[in-house]
Amino acid sequence: MEYTDYSSWKGWLTQIPFAELSEVQNIKFKKQLERFHIPYKKINALEIGYGNGSFIKFLKNNDSKVEGIEIQDSLLEAAREFGIPAQRSINDVTCGPYDLIVAFDVLEHLTVEELRSLFHKCKLLLKKDGVMLLRFPNAESFAGLGAQNGDFTHITAIAQTKLQQIIEPYGFKIERFEGELIYPRKNVVHAIRSVFRYILMKGMGVGSGHFFSTNVIALVKNI
Image (cartoon, rainbow, N blue to C red; front, side, top):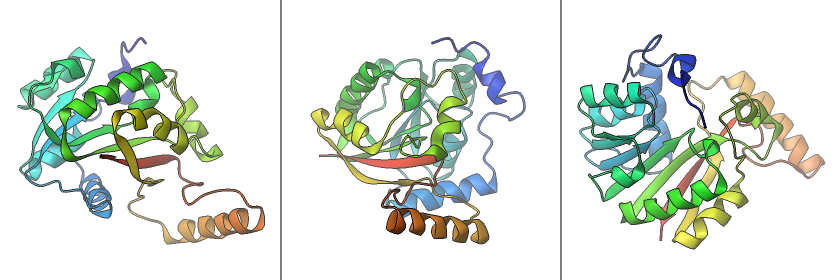
C-alpha cells in the first residue's frame, strides 16, 4: 500500500506538531484506560502506528517507557528526535517484553494475513499478564462506514467475531469490546442515541451497545 504524503494528508508534522497532546486528548486517553482498568504509569509499552505521537506523549508524561512502529520516514525521524526508539517493522523492536501494546487506527490498514502475522508477533512480545488496546472503525453498523471507506488505505473491515477468529489461535481473547469513549460527551446527543438504540434493540431486535459508535475499542488479553 502506498503511503506517500499520507502524513501530510493527515496534517501530521505540518498542521500539528509531533507529540502535541491537547488537554482534551489527555483526559480522553486517561478515561479510556481507566475505564478498562489498564495501568499507564511506569509501564513498558509499544505503540504500533503511532502517527503524530499524541499517545506517546501521554505515556511519557506518565513516566512510562514506550517504543513505536511507523513506516513513514518523517514520522520515524520525528519520534527519534523526541527520544523515542522507533522502528519500521515489529520485527525490529528491541524494548520488550511489553505490559501494553496499542494500535489505534491500524488494523483496518492490514490484510487478514498481515493481521495474523501481527498478532503472532505480539504474542511473543507481550508479557504474560499484558494486554492489547485496539481501535478501528465499527464494521457492525452503518455508523462506521464513513471511517472505514473514507480512506483508500483501509483494507479490512473488522467486527468483534472476525477479530476473535483472527486472534484466538495465538492465545488471545477479547476482554471488552465497545464503542470508543466520547469526551467531552454531549448529553443531549447521548440521550437521543440511547432512545434510538433502545428502539432498535428492543423494538426491532437489532443493534448493540456500540451500534451508534463510529469507532470501537477492543481490549485483548494475553491468556
